[in-house]
Length: 116
Image (tube, rainbow, N blue to C red; front, side):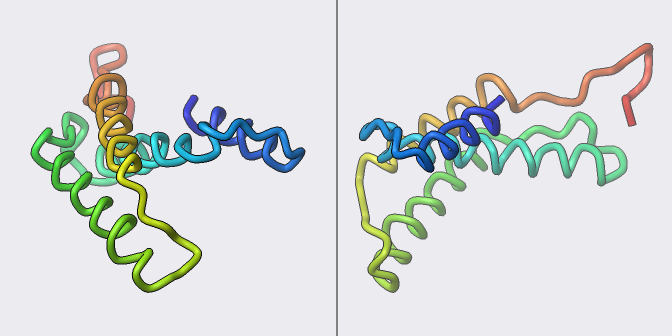
């Protein structure tokens, strides 16, 4: 669903149909849920015995800090195409909350067994 939202927004951008608030922050909100859900699925499906794996809240906090350091500190320092925006930190936190609240789940058991 998040990929669909991101994709629709990117298509709209190509037609200059941009809403300033979404242009500034949507990608920052969607980044962590998309990245973390992809990583979670990879761990659950590719590593034997990890179908119940979920990302801990502590790890989510560490990921928010690392994203903040890289995208708001390091990257703007070395690349003038990027700017530091403190509101982005809030966006990363909202994205992590979305992931934790709605996506960070073990794989379901289907018909008495794991789907993989």
